[in-house]
Length: 243
Image 1: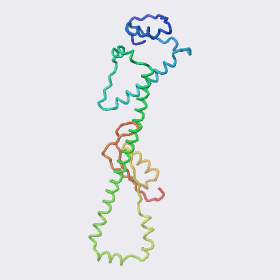
Image 2: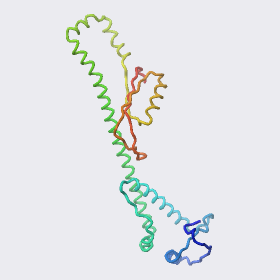
Image 3: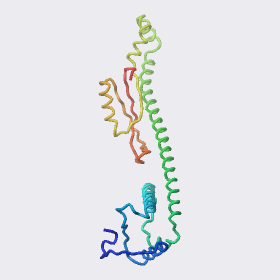
Image 4: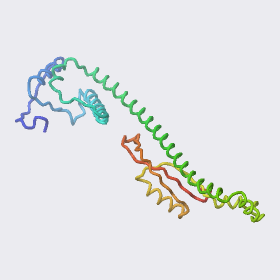
């Protein structure tokens, strides 16, 4: 059923001269209520096939443009203004409309690629910033207790401690410290995946790692989907240098 399905319909055949076909079709579309059907839709013999393909391609471009415009805040698209279109139908040429649509499509594709690149660059800068902030906070927590203990001991206590140390500590102490020292690596992950990531890492290393997550309260835009996602900084602590 077509758009006139509520009306009583009858099938008919209209034969028109080829050189005046466009003129008569325009008059019929303006003055009467008639629905046209493609009699050759299921056959290979379609003299207007290339024009139908061009119109289908223009419809695809219009759908793409409407989807992109709907994502723009406060953007309003005026549609279904059929009377104005019919009044100015003589001003519209298929070749001109097709060229303008293709040019707009090319520009929107370029805008989309530029926006994706800028969003990805911004996200990378923000992620690096929050990783550095997490590292600085971690270093401050480590240096704080160590400096307080040094101030509490004083110079005399340092001499007594050094005098009571074994002579073998100077030779073997470096290697022992390397064996007991924890290494770490950091990065950024989506908060929705952090629990699964921690469990997978814990199982893969047989419990020889500890993962700390620091939430990033500033949401970031996914350059692929355009949606806001929440991310977190992860820090993995481990002993094995081979990780």
